[in-house]
Image (cartoon, rainbow, N blue to C red; front, top):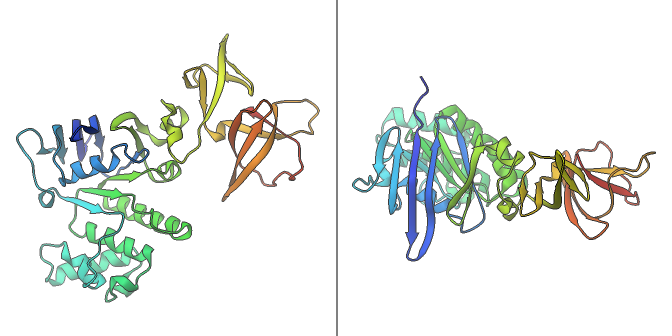
Length: 339
């Protein structure tokens, strides 16, 4: 028998005056799952997180945690009684307490030897056992974030809520801390909801993604499926570039300036929605001329890949992500086409 989701949100709405921040959202998250709420600023992500935590009460709808109603029209459990851990963007550590005492603060029997041993074990899991007597202000941003995570886990929550937890870290620390955090969360078997406006981060972190825009749930599903067939051009509002290619239906597919595409490609208002990975660049020295001539405007290294912004003859601007063992010469003549 399939286990019941740890988080169940049913038709939840919330307004601030005349502003509808969350509109009729339904969502469930299983134990051990990391679910990302993705969308631009003002889309309702953080408001939904605060409703789950109990920091605010929704106007309508129902929220369940571990099968029990924690908020509906007649019930509203306060945040401290919801078995929920919350890691804020600014970490919110107590500046006058040591690392160990910060972790112990959230534990009911914080003075017991058992609690101390448990806190030290958690600190060891994130590589901070040797910093237990340090004060927060001498820690790096990444170390503070890990302390905040451990403090939230110390109370053995069933649900973990993360509000853009990596946004204050530099690129190098961000990847390291993110990997450690996700590993600890999966081992803890909690249901995790993470807010981000970074589509690339959502893809790296999550099992499932829900895209919000103006408080509405636009699309929700496994990360791979959401990005393989984006349901709306609002994905372009995130940091992940989405190409909008004018197209007309022709027989069993679509015809575009960059070649043909199958009928199952997403079409919105006469334009195909294509991710950078769905296009390819060709160096124009092949015997057969394929693709459309283009010129490179910018290129951004992304580790093993490079993101190109290219201008196609006729003025169309598109993004192409390539995995090349050897980069083409700067003076190479390039063409772009749909894969």
